[in-house]
Image (cartoon, rainbow, N blue to C red; front, side, top):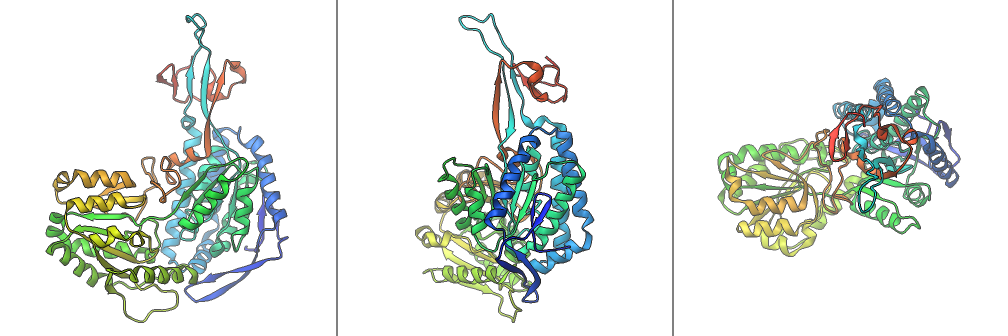
Length: 527
């Protein structure tokens, strides 16, 4: 049941005077429930409770944390159709998407549960003492990862489940041993409250400390600002716009104790089409990419917003077919009037740039908050000279850049901002003739795709969902997969510490049975 209240640990609270509602973009009306924005008192209570919970939760065994994460997945599933219905009412996304995203959210939680139960993720290193070493004795030094402390997670507008309340950031932080305070996204506050109730129900069932999780409502930026500035908050996770992510990053860096902000922000996800591939299957590629550009009304962080190719008859034919195919697709409803408003504004800004031409736009009548997909094209010289053309237009929009030669193609890629993905479309071994293009892509992206589409992010250990700024604030980390846990921990060493006082992961007998690096040898044996 949705109450519109905040979750401060195990308690519900509604002390704030500011109220707001979510919006149904399909029906173009406000939803009925009023939500209470968190007050300064409630923010402080949530963080203080998280800090208190951290003192014990950081030392919980992997088995206990794993049971908690699995219980969250169980409780989310138990929400049943109510969660799916509210998700659709608040996002305008179809029921199939809601069910798929719920499944992904549960899978992420269970994957982290398996990770922490196994225990190897702490990356235990042991260098035993050599008291007789000359000229100086060598001390016993042991290292492992330990949690940072309370983490603030900002819900994402375009993924109400998988990147929000119990999404990847929250799952990874809880797995690491960090309590989480979620700043719920105002566009899907009801979805967030249902999931928050599931998390706290799981926490109580598995004996977690009060405050291990809180969920705070917010209609603007004030709650987020106060959370990032709170001295007991030790890290931040964010998925959203460059403007929003950079503002949080700057706030965190100006604190008396700066803290890390792991933000996943803008990306146009360049796709390079090589000539032989276009010659052989250009029409099929155009159909595929028409679907990719419009998938989910273009509201994916991996939407292919920039298509690059060498200017010739094959590229011309590809653009023509792409234009024909994309307008055959029924346009989708965007998440909120503000989202489609930004789409139209940014599309207009791009089209106002000299040299950019519209080659296709859906021109039939559409309903409220439905986005008209568009294909544009521009010459390579123009694109190189105008950084405004490099900016993301979030929605079903793509730009084809026609490069005069291989050298210009490389130059364009090198000049681009950091991206989440880059894709190379080639025939057979055609790619071997373009090593410079491949190296340029590697320099600018976190994941490179061969003969595929960027839309779709597999949740697995090998996935990198991040990239050079502004794709993310720290290209060394991923926001998807089990390795995303590394964002919420730090290395910590014990020197000459009594064995009985060491964490289980570092004790001589290795009671957890994990793989450790002992004197430069990987082993699960005891010392």
